[in-house]
Each structure stands twice: as structure tokens, then as C-alpha cells.
Length: 237
Image (cartoon, rainbow, N blue to C red):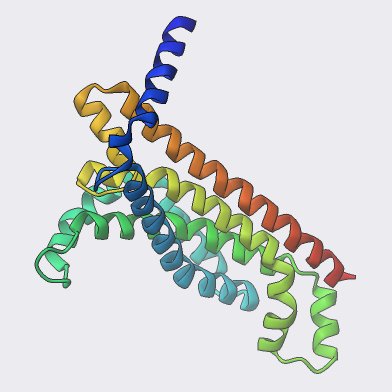
């Protein structure tokens, strides 16, 4: 067993060391860029939708239970099934003209829907977790509703909000690989190609790069959240 692992590891290292795998459309730089761009665009799309919803239901308390329950239904839907549904819909409704990347659009929409629930939930939880005494003190100082939200609630809720963004980002990085099943790009292409060609080195190389990217995002957000949390503690005082 150990010999098999060492053999696979050597094959993966050989694959990474092959110059062919570092050039062209199927090269590591291009596939890594495709994956990062997909994840960044998906997260931006999810943030644009989810953060305002979370801030509204957290600040006002209106429709909070219904909204959180609805968005969390998405967690029960497998991402692969979601892409399978969105792929033909993307073909039917695409407006980008001939040559449009349907797989990219379907993956993007699926990743946005995947990222929305944790961001909405954590944004709402962060806002609702702000001490009511602090809110009353802010209103007593003459701050209006939007000023309380912008100047007090958001800064204090930011660490919790970022935890939701971290969860969503790691999920998107890992799950965006499924887009390759439908012809999309990114690091998932190596995994799909590895299965198709029975090339374990290529498959494991793709999986390692996805895992490394997810770990990097996890560590980066962890560092950022700790810094923001220290600032929030100072603000509470």
C-alpha cells in the first residue's frame, strides 16, 4: 500500500514537472486562472444578492424566518443536479450571441446559488447579534436607522458576515470543478480528463490544486476574520 502511494506521488510530481502541462490552453496557468475567475465572479454575484438581503432582514427583522428558510433550501439541492438543470436553461436563454460559453454561464449561476445561503444566514445572524443596548445608545445619540446600520451594526457584524463568505468561497472553489463535466474550464478539467483517460496522475494533480486553492482561501479568510474581529472588539468597548 505504501509503495502504491509513493508510486502515485512520484507520478504526480512527474506530471507537475512536465513542461507540457504548463503551456497552452490546457496548461496549469490557464486552467488555474479560469478556476479563480469563475470563483471570483460567482462570489461577487452572490455578495451582490445576499448581503443586501441579509442586512435588510437583520436590521428590520422583517421576513427573517421565511427568507432564511427559503435560501437554505438551496443547501439541500445537489450542485451537480442544479448545473444539470441550469445547463439547458442557459442554452435556451443565453443572450451573449454565437460562441457564448454555455457551460461557464451554467456553472456561474449554480455557484452563485450555492454561495447565497451561508452569506445571507451569517449576515442576518451577525446583525441580529449586535447588542440591543448599543443600538439604543446609538439612537440616543441621534443616529437614524441607516446610520445605525452603517456605523454600528455592519462593523460589529462583519466578522460573522466574513465567516459566511469564507464558507461560501471554499464551497465554490471545491464545487466549481463540476462545471468541467459540462464542458467548462478550470481545474476540474484535469479531474474529468483523468477519469476519462484513466490517468491517475492528472486526476490527482487536479484534485491537489483544488484542495490547495481551498486551503489557501480558508487560511486567508481566517487571518482576515481575526483582524476584523479584534477591531470589532475595540469598537464594542
